[in-house]
Amino acid sequence: MTRTHTIRIHHRQTGQYYTVEVPEDRYILQTAENQGADLPFSCRNGACTACAVRVKSGTLVQPEAMGLSPDLRDQGYALLCVSYPRSDLEVETQDEDEVYELQFGRYFGKGKVRFGLPLEDD
Ligand code: FES
Image 1 (cartoon, rainbow, N blue to C red):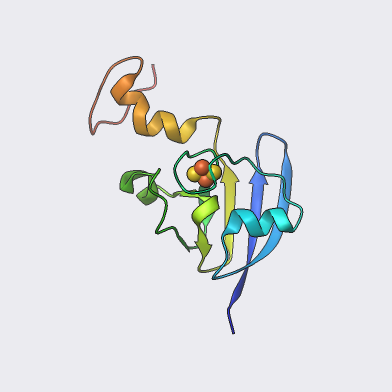
Image 2: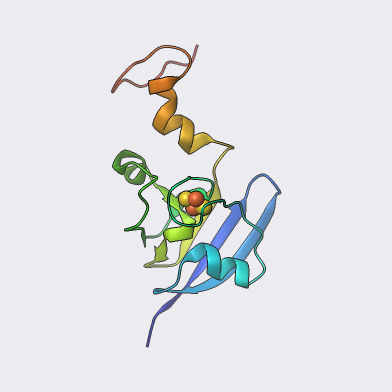
């Protein structure tokens, strides 16, 4: 039998909390929507980062998350539309475009480019 995990999702922009039950062979986003969660998404295939969350606790796998760099995966970000749970999880939605900025902002954007160095506060 497929194991099922309890996923707690904090949608920070709307202030909503959702608790959903997701089997290990189901995508978290779609299963959560089927259980009444109203969450951000766009492409639904791991390319755009609209559905990105920060994982606060627990483990998931996201082999199809091509929109997310290995660095950001290591930092605990995940694309819910292509994530499968591997334990109970607690996640929260990103700030708008947070993941996009982290991935591309320093290459195309504003301000100073500092590869590999933490940004100072000022
Ligand atoms: S909705 Fe586009 S990456 Fe998940």
